[in-house]
Image (cartoon, rainbow, N blue to C red; front, side, top):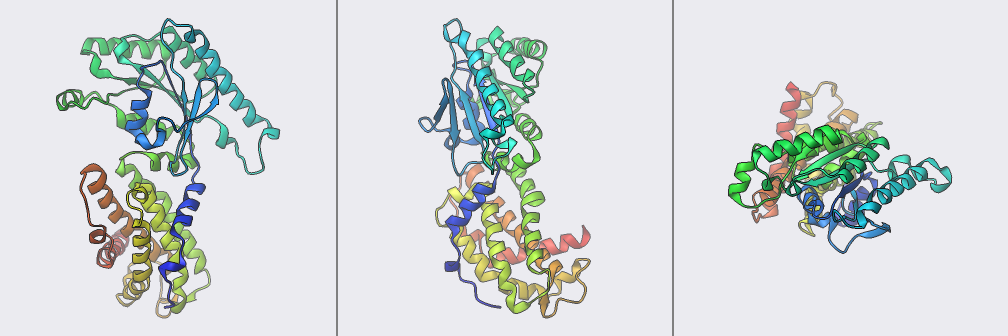
Length: 389
């Protein structure tokens, strides 16, 4: 097979292209001063997504947080102190800004040729209410009802529930259910192990994230899921059901007219980009600067060898539809199946790395995970599973 060198590939440019292709949901985060908005954002997405001092004021009282390498855009409303002058302006300010964005979406003269309605609109609202205040205010109710009237998906994030006893929590929930009439989720970022243990049956972080995903347009879910801190299971499902199939289709396109085995290097750029996309989704692209080139080098050096090994082992015969055209040429089924198997292998390795690094806090040796032996074993596993699946 023709040589394809790692030096032929611009890893940073490709990661930038991947980021640019991901549509980002716009999330509006509302609530009074002290409602715990920053804590919620940091818990769900990590502090890097909305670092203090990195926001851009877009209008009076509303700040935009956007990072090129993050999959969401956050709009944070300036809080208000209950009983102060600011409270009277809060609802009008938020409503005026939401109306402005809606009008821009509906006015073709305010869009450029590449814009789309989804780009500018607010896609969902997280309204934070602190359980520490032990009440739902009239302002909370008014703003939530106003946002609902704009046909925006709105949820209440009930924060700091460690400040309530069981009876008070029931009362707060009843007030939200009856007066706000939206779904709500109980949260706390308490770090005391005893408090965390006591709250285990009450916390609803995972439910909040599921609600957020379910209320996004399908085209926006990848950005949201890739931006999550943790939630590796959701990321693996996204990779298996959306990202890998995207690249297997690309590989099939290359081999639409069967290509000689010697030209199979044409698949390598697709497989490298897929591997980088998988890494990025797990958040590993930010963990180690040269990890992308390491993974790319492994893919480059192993792709041809593994394809030849797969052909000689007749593993493709495990997949219906391959037929007999696998001796000297690579057809669409061979190209897509091989790319899917490699995608599965890279995803599984990245999942194990991310689990070790992010959830277990381990220092790992990357080459212990990213090597030809591991990739070959996992690809063989994929072929065997595909035979029965």
